[in-house]
Image 1: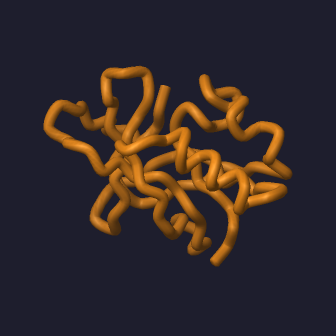
Image 2 (image 1 turned 90 degrees about the vertical axis):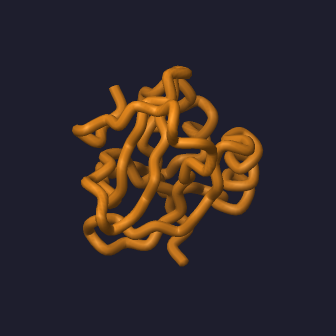
Length: 115
């Protein structure tokens, strides 16, 4: 398993919570994962990953110490998200955080990009 992390919302470079991971990032590169992106209405997005979806745009982060950083992010992301292995459109297996709470109140973001 590749220890890299796909981020698509507030953890992207320059995002609202970039500081949660910035010191742990060696490099980053744009990437896409198949799925759907939703606006939670709370200032952060939610992604559901599956082959039938459109593309969710974001970045793959290469981390200095993946084990420590991912443990921190597991706590930071809380109960609404679960860390899982996903595959980028380019075929790279990476970690990401998928929404596991109720989808009903969320609004689908057609373009797959968080603003």
